[in-house]
Image (tube, rainbow, N blue to C red; front, side, top):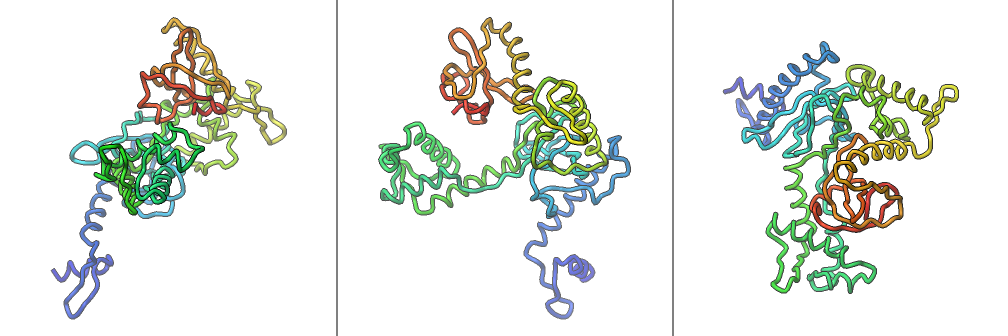
Length: 375
């Protein structure tokens, strides 16, 4: 027992409090559990990564176990890399983890919660940590309720802010409904009036923290195929977005980083051959609206296939145009995910937004905003 106490002291998990007496740190048990879990994860990562041809003799200090390791790089933006392995992170097989061979030269173990986003082995992903915080909708509700005796309804909202629309106010009601189902408050009177307490922002934060436990990171699929297969496709790829970015990410010159660097060079040469970019000495200049040109190429090709399947012609929507029709489904392309909107005599494709999921099969309308989506 004394020997173990001295070991804990060296680990800074206990401190002397008298002759042969120690005071244990309050977080000692959880720290030891985390250390044991980290050891198991590192062994798993080492086994998987040493099977990768791009990672011979990889060192343990290149492993990062997110959620356990407290390293500065965990707060420096998204993790971008190739999926090496995916599996279940708990005994109930509800949570998922990914092992990612990062472009930064590190191997990352990330608990992605209950995310259902497809992540094929060999595909390229971006994993962005999610922060739990009250939203602007929550702050608006709290402000309006404070000015109206702790009450909130759509009518109260419209009286308080004459510039607001009813559909905009309804988004606040849906937010309140989601929080009430998860947390049990705020209360809603039989007449539909919401009773908003002075602690509403704390309630909203608790709701976000519960969501955070289920989905601690945002999973974005950058490419379902190996990155070198993106170098000659007529579509807006992650490579193109990175080439034209003003703030490019740091890419290591070893491991997967070296593969990505090669893919970027090959893609740049392909763009020059396609007359979508021009070399001037050591500099390369890209066509204006390069991403839109590439996206439209892929869209027209996919739309041709959909047109044959649906028996309808495709009409492309330009920024500023109104879109009205029935949202049928999402369509995944290399350039991103799009919403298929069917109209009486034709159909169109517009960039997808996550909140469109609940409108599938329903009529919708909106204005195309500079190629981003419809509002």
